[in-house]
Image 1: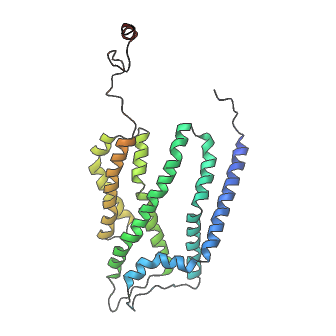
Image 2: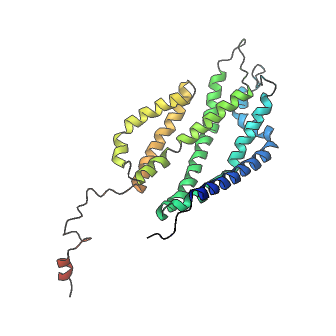
Amino acid sequence: MLTEEKSPFTEHLGELRDRLVRSFIAVGIGFVAAYFFKEKLFEILTAPLITAMGDNENTRMIFTGLPEAFFTYLKVSLLTGIVLSTPVLFYEFWMFVSPGLYRTEKKYFLPIVFLSVFFFAIGSSFGYFIVFPYGFKFFLGFATDTIYAMPSMKEYLSFASKMLLAFGFVFELPLVLTFMARMGLVTVPFLKKNRKYALLLFFVGAALITPPDVVTQIMMALPLMVLYEISIIGARVFGKKQTSDIDTDDPERPENPSPEDTGNHKG
């Protein structure tokens, strides 16, 4: 029986406020640090596009409004600051929710947080290093002698950030399905049985998330197919064990001997 009384609601609000303040301070420090390297950070972000442009003098990046470049650098610095402060953000979140978790839930929380960051980074890297070069070459291929490609800084930042977030989140699929299997919400037979419907949803989702070109859609749908198979393996290894096929009332099971059986084996 728990003898510890619950903290008052106002105390929880006070703790939440303090942790949010520390989180905002961490993001602010990361933002200020990143702003000193704003040009270099934006250069790294635009590297796939610049490489795809090549030396074509009719293809260049522009900004169409006077404050556009300034605000674009601010957004890049803010995004970088959030990324740099993720250890602090995860720590504050963990310290806030950990008192309300059971011991078994605490055991899985930190690995889940680490793996979620890992899969997100893998997904974003896949989008940056694999999808962006091919996708940008496809789009720039529509330029002609009279039609120039001149993407603006603001539009590119919006497009690139959305795509990187999309690839980062879709790569969380194995972790999500494995966790659901661990909680008993899905099973390996269920995932195998609905594989064809999942593949259809992958292509539909890729068509909605990515730009309207077949190459980019396929480059998102194919990894999802592989990730789904990895999810089935994860569900088989870490999923909740099914006991429906085990007759726990069978007196002849060695694991559950009857009192008479245990008495007969004495001496």
